[in-house]
Image (tube, rainbow, N blue to C red; front, side, top):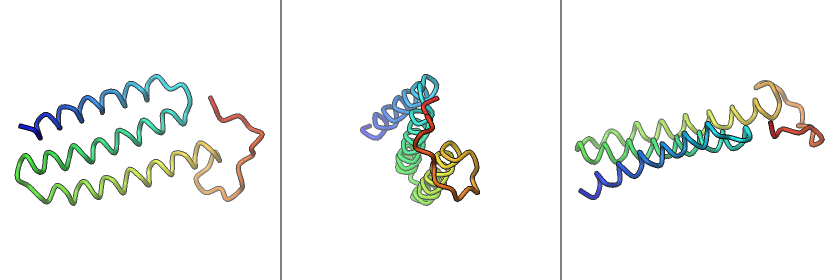
Length: 98
């Protein structure tokens, strides 16, 4: 019963992360919301794996966590530099708070 309540609370948290991502106001707020959604998804996969008696779901949760981390880094690099292959330093004079 406790894990069912935990799953519902995680789903509620995921809904709030989506709302934060849609509202913004900056790109970094949206990136943080996507990262939070990914973390909540990892927790939800782990809880569902426990509820269904499938411990192999933890492997899926770990893979999803790694992909979510790499995706967040790629999004932030693209927003900062405008190109994923760029090696230049960001210009601190530019305003990135769209």
